[in-house]
Image (cartoon, rainbow, N blue to C red; front, side, top):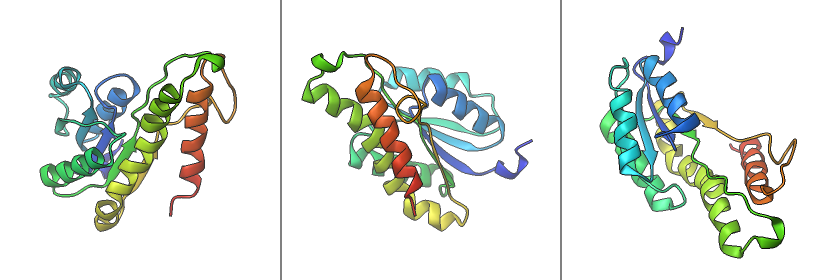
Amino acid sequence: MFASLQGRSAIVTGGSKGIGRGIAETFANAGVNVLITGRSQADLDKAVAALSDAPGKVSGFSADVSSPEDARRAVAEAVERHGGLDIVCANAGIFPSGRLEDLTPESIEEVLAVNFKGTVYIVQAALAALTASGHGRVVITSSITGPITGYPGWSHYGASKAAQLGFLRKIG
């Protein structure tokens, strides 16, 4: 089904659980060598072990995408382990609930730092490697929360996801 992806290299941020782990599994089953990132080494170890039988090689790398330096280190690690980078999947995200009147500058910054800035930082870090591959691709996991619908308690989350989509439309 995805034979054209076999042997390619990908990073999936937030790939140790949830949607990211599902994306990593799909890539690995298509023969893609995948570097998953996450903040918890224990979660990374569990995901790597669970995906060890896939045709593509899966490895973990502890990184916080809200740090530009961690994003650069993750890309360098993928290039070193896989000989290049073809796909970056910006999936890492958090969604703490909070009533608008209770949101603090710190809670807003945390959501924007991971969900929006983390997307920008990993894509920025990957640009040279994606260009060098000759067929680089960017995949961004956003949400209908923000641009289409909203939920009480997720105003900061919705704003971060709408920001991702605005960024995606202007890449290039």
